[in-house]
Length: 205
Image 1 (cartoon, helix red, strand yellow):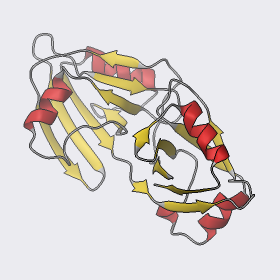
Image 2 (spheres, one colour):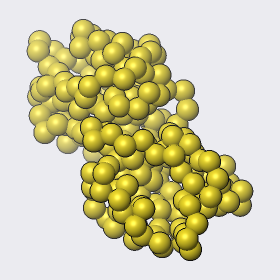
Image 3 (cartoon, helix red, strand yellow):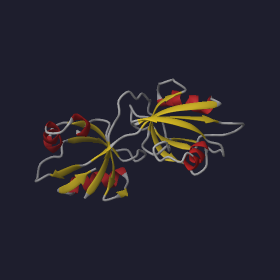
């Protein structure tokens, strides 16, 4: 069993709000990137909108849930010519026009600004082989049917804590990571949780 886990980044602020969408346009923008941080700038023109769906269910993460088919972001992704600079689901919004804050604040800034400068962090995927052998996994998970995957809220012992002792810090399981995929396919958070409970041996990615 292969389970994909996206690693958390630090320094994210938000409030818990319903998922939000920002509509469509035909123009794109420009970008710069450095390691896992990406800066993308868009100009709305007369009526352009970004075309992002935001997952705002986790208290400390402003997460891009989906890039809609029509919008400034989709246009940018088509024209930028670089996979590294394309805006992707699971990217996390750090700031809007230099401002950080709660998710509601960031969404308001995106909605009201003519020029929109987004600073994004791109999470890393990691691979962990798990064999429970009757032991507890040791992860505190948040179940929310509106979120992308399962959010790890903490490591409290069990197999996960034991594995963390022998791993580099950037490979350890920790609060803020997300489990989003099993066996190469996306599933609901409820299905992910049931499979984590029922499988004895699997690989976390």
